[in-house]
Image 1 (cartoon, one colour):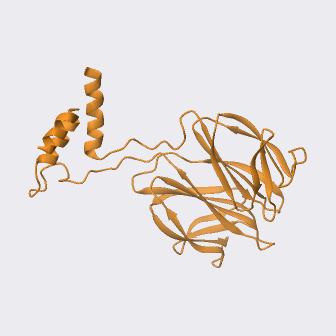
Image 2 (cartoon, helix red, strand yellow):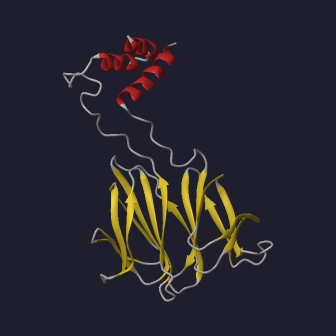
Image 3 (cartoon, rainbow, N blue to C red):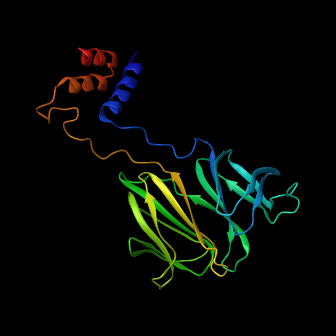
Length: 267
């Protein structure tokens, strides 16, 4: 009885205050894996531990996220019409995934234009209320670049296969990519929306020499912070013109007396 009342009080407090439990970015005890195909002009099949997991994967496509048991997985890319993974065009590559982590495996070109792959760990740590996270990854056969947001350089001198990130106020930003030290964009400008409690990941992929540069965008939920304040007067008496019924019902809910609160509100 005591345990039920305490649990009811806790639930009532959260509901009355308008809070919600922090979002879980990854299923508890599992690993989350997405796959980005960033090799131009090369449709592939993706084999995981010998099984054709992604069929006819096209350049620029993002697959997943897949919920996987933690462990090491062997990944190989083959021609799209291959019967098995005995003659891969890339790999096999061993990917080690840990529990409660989010990853993106990217098949892409290195700075010299050779096919390669990288496993990136997606930052799902908590963001402040009202903020989102912007991550930029350089996976293109191109020199180092600067990343612009709303006309100003946000990240400087990003080289393949590095990444950079920062938390920014949620909103829509005009993003562009230029070669380091230059102002004329080689990609963009394009609008990128940064949502609260979301890691928005932008990839530059393709080849500058072959004129196949492009952008890909991925979003990953992070552990979001609870709101920092509750609007005054919503459940209290700060709004002198409001009825006291919602306030009294909220107090009863805080005490775990949900049934009584509902009856009181109806009366």
